[in-house]
Length: 204
Image (cartoon, rainbow, N blue to C red; front, side, top):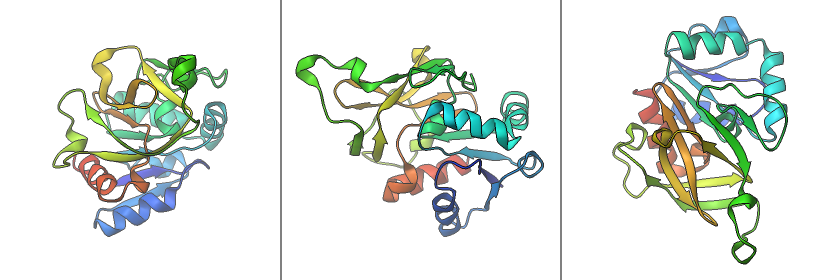
């Protein structure tokens, strides 16, 4: 069963509704004991990096998450800030991240020249480009997703890039290393593209 980490950030209800429509079993996990039963983990998030890390620590689920993801290799999907906290740190704050995929979260403005500035946050629909075969995009033609963010994941290892997007420059918008996945966009707001991606994650 997919367990959606309910630590006070992210639209948990939207993911539960989508999985219900797909006839895939999913539930919210609010304690380490509830999370322990997970065979797939979805880690949502909106807002600031440090706030997300503080709430996750306060939830009491951090140690269980590390055990499931790092030791038992349970598939995990971080969404938006849930992707960003997979990394080591963020220019947005001072807290250490989960460190599951090596990288630093950076402001989008750092990628732009004075002549190439675009509005922030990056908001709206964009095509994404696969950097290699990506199992989460299986059977999805011309993938297109909804974004809402001002920071991006600058992964340390090029091989961890699964997909990229263009907005004032090209950057990683999906990371993957072994059982750990993260997407900067919002599959729960991305119509059939998002539904198929979440279905593919459930089938990993």
